[in-house]
Image (cartoon, rainbow over the protein chains, first blue to last red):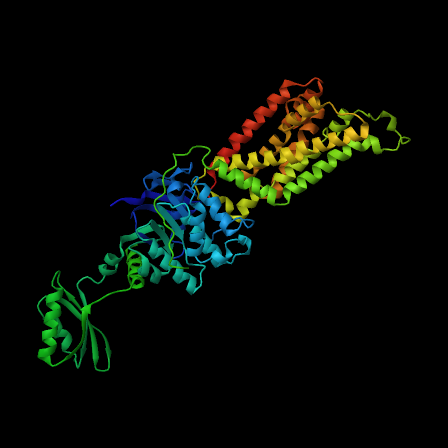
Length: 316
Length: 264
């Protein structure tokens, strides 16, 4: 696995505020990596440190193997979209992209690529208008295009969909999915639904500290491992005890009751999930119950996120 | 957004860059911004008007007015007469006082630094572009136009060697004041503050110099007088040139230190 972004002990202290503490993170190349956290968690600070817009109090970072430094050489590897992107109002969208592209050297195919990018982010019609006439959403789209125009190995997007309407948000998320494999997308957001839809990896930050970093499916499974959600029709108060006595079951508890439907969480021992599912099916048949559902429990990212944050706060 | 895709492949590294990484791109942008905005027009308008007016004053002053007899009708002297004061230095400060502060306000300075460009390149490009524009529109164009007017009005061509040498040497004046406003812009966000300190630097040494003449001699603000003296063959102190060189070095080093410490 090649690493697109690497940070080691990255720390940032502002006057009276510890914005980021000891962030050590490896972002695999070619992935869409979601950087999650509540407001004020330190996401923007971390991104600015990686872009070289702020200096770390301690620690280091590299982009595509190039150390982040004041001199700016690492920015050859990087496209960056700020949370509130600003451009020269006297330039058109097309001129803005041309300006950014020139930093990467001469390229005879530049103009064609600029036109395609304007089209790709949905502002082709406004490409020859001054950016001072752009709405917030259009600036955000232009910001994404300018981050991509230099064909960087890594793009950093700080809250890329925060200023967009639902249609724009959907379009940008689709674009991010299209970029998978082409370039590494490292983006911050607090919209958990989006992360679950497009990210291969997730890192969760809270109060400036990394809470968890893992592939999305691993993170989502981390709280539901060995957990089954069982819904039985015609159950009774004795059913819970009966479920606990099945082979391989560690615990069973009633979650809810809706009329005749009783819902249970059943925890199996490691590696016994399939056997427990089969045992539950047999139990339902033998007890004359209607088996409505017997599947591995899946949590959404929001639930996982809140549990991780809660755990951290309890531990603190 | 369409499904059409723009090919994105990892960028090819174009060398490692150095202190002047991205200079050319920022320089071209700066020149374009000067030319497309109103600043260049204002610099040209004010400078040409003032230089032309100063050149033809002896011609338009009524011959019977007091002191009219003392006015020279020499075209060279009249072309250079407007350049003794601080008008062009004031124009340089006013035209460049917001070069950095506006960008800091608007957030475009931080955006620039997300591209492969060094902080040094941004400062150097801003100074160099302002020098090119101001040099042509604020120095060479007014001198060329007032020379042409003097030829017509006074019936003789000015000494082009003297006038040309002065024009080149006078570039030291905008070089200092533009350097000063750019350097101040690295530390000050307020445009008014930059202008205020710029004018203080412009006028304070001459005030102190009235008490201690050596101050006038070594002050970089005397570089215009030094250019005039050198071009016309009058005595010119090498200390003035030395003071200017030291001041420029201080501005460059100071601006770089402060700008490198900025965070966005």
